[in-house]
Length: 271
Image (cartoon, rainbow, N blue to C red; front, side, top):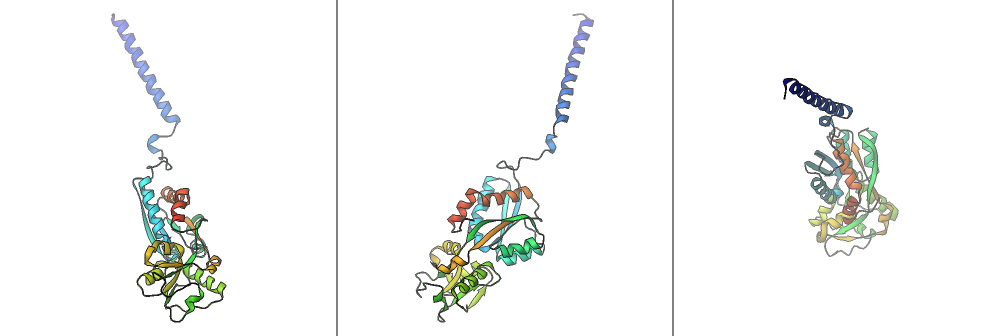
């Protein structure tokens, strides 16, 4: 091959390489930069970060289950919970406590957060809950109605009036036109139930879900007035969230068919 023909072939090869580089450059510039593109947060396993959820005490068992399901579905994520009386949790949020999601046991306590401007978007009801009387195993005092709790020989515990379960109990008592003086007012529904579990009280007005979760530690007694005091449970994203997409994904799980299955299995009513 002559030098002239060798030079011509080299030039053609170089030209083809340059054209390929130009085409690749054009392709890259015409689309988004892959290194700066955000991953599809809807894809399983693509979410990351920690979600801090403030939730009513009555949600402890069901939300703990959903938290584990969420972490399994999205490796690299973590869900942490703070359970307690909804009024106390709302006060903590408005006081600046860092949280991503708030699930309350009543619209009234949720309103504390929305009125303070700490919610992102409009809260949505995801479940409802109804009251039940928790008695000692075997119901030794033969409690059969709300009226039976007015017996002065019974040690009865209620949630504090500012707590959703306490407000609901007062509403049920008003519907039945009954007055009840408990031996103590507790700051959340789990504390009220514990009094019966420890035999420090003969009965407590709690939620159906709490009686369900306690198993054979207590016995539940239904009463018709509870239908007049059913609580809606709203959930919302908070403005203080540090990971919006992951927090939204947890809320989506709570509201999904799978979330509803866990909640109804725990005794919650559908929204």
